[in-house]
Picture 1 (tube, helix red, strand yellow):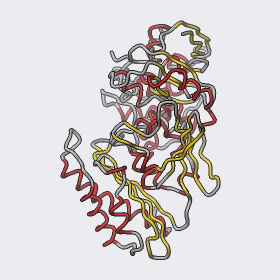
Picture 2 (cartoon, chains in turn cyan, green):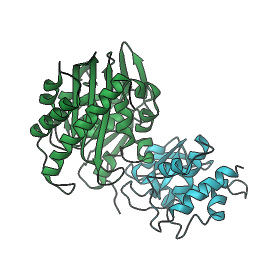
Picture 3 (cartoon, helix red, strand yellow):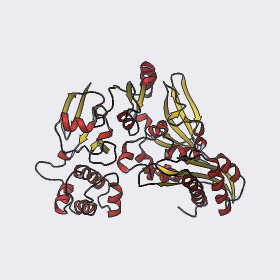
Picture 4 (cartoon, chains in turn green, cyan):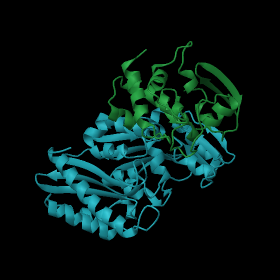
Length: 153
Length: 291
């Protein structure tokens, strides 16, 4: 089947199998490898992207379900060479170690700040509770989101 | 790498269109809503439909409204939308209690209420919730629509009364005076399926329990309910002693089995204790003396 997906403002049309998962469409078909393919069981959150305005685990969404919709990946956070505050927060506060969970953490963090510009650490922890950092760097991830809240673009 | 087996895909544009597609593709077609139960099952080959009928475009099934003395929930409503709904929380706090402990915020943002019910996992939180609330399910098919009580919706593990060619479109809960409700769950970790969970809905007339609904999940309760405990409560006083006795009766009548989540006797203990806690909290809410 043919799908047309608007990824980070760019329209892509591809022929895909209906069973293709969105994470593989992004990584293998579009070569956007910023989104990470982790647990494959919708537990870890490394694959989180936005489908229209909603953060989703793209290992549990078919590319077909994104047909005609917008997708935002970590590559789309930066605009015209300027990093999004959430990205700067992770850089400023050492919010990543190995970096595997980072794209999902950033996309959920961005979504949270869009809905709650001044979240408490407890709110941030709740929002990120569907995502796993196996380096256990949660303290700095929470600080990174707080940094972004305090330094909006 | 886990990928589903080969499957055909159709995008429905209305309920009528979805029903037409179901008729055309027959019993091996499956409705795809959020996919957060179905796609994992397909990856594991526990489900292998020939055709997926994607209903994510059906905005007409995405609503929470109060109409005709009922709370009505469209089945494509995402878990996060139910958790965010002030109307749902105001009338039935149990809905927020339960949604808060289902999976995690990202899964809740895409998984749907109807999908969870139709998946019919024997540990599903919403099945116990709607059993406690004595909800009614609206099912549409080629010959029109029919309603089924929540307690007659499940016919077994992973099986419901929704026939091939039919679509669950709405859940209805009657809003009655003097009501309060609550949900209590124990899981191995945050966001996991329950080891055991209980929901309670209470309708008071003064200090008397006019009606009671108790839902149980993951403990082998028939129809996800504790009918004998409800019968004991009805017409009696809303006291600590009656909550405790109702918990004992609920535990006596469920049939938990030992598995990787815990031994049967522990689950029976949870059925008792969580029923008591949910009743206590539901009554407090019905009286307006607690959250």
